[in-house]
Image 1 (cartoon, rainbow over the protein chains, first blue to last red):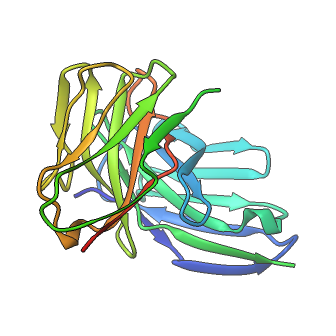
Image 2 (image 1 turned 180 degrees about the vertical axis):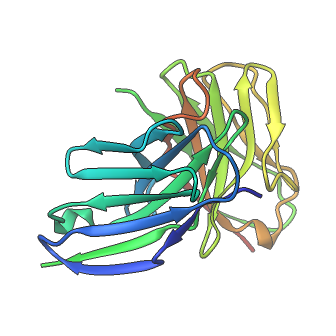
Length: 109
Length: 113
């Protein structure tokens, strides 16, 4: 089934550095979303980018979408320890939203 | 406060004993979904509903049932749980524009012995 695949699976950086996560998918989409999950808790919606958009910003988050390559990236700038979490991309079509397997981000002091 | 609630949060049961996990949202959302999360597999959709009395299968519906008699509630029913249904379950709801900005419940951790 259509699914986003995040890369890398795990990422460890120091506080203040930027973190970049990538997502690739297989078929046409209406939108692509990024969610954050703190350990064992519910997912929290971060940002949505539509298929006709190429870049979007929200605070320290920057998302890009390249529909020709079927890929997206999430950049978190000036990371903080509180950004430690798992990040999931999700591809949206008219009928469903499909999640990837996630990137685990560890931000150390 | 806008929220999605699930109960129970933790459940240990035995094979074959029917159980229900409740889900309720107070945002008047039309779309609701159930997901299970397993290590290395991400979130997989079990069932979803686009309105009252309208439900459909997701990617992994086997062994589960749902109902949507009221807009706010979307219970997940395991008629005869098996150990392979041990998982972390999430309910989510979203606005009537469809699969955008889903709001997730806190999760239900289920162990089937």
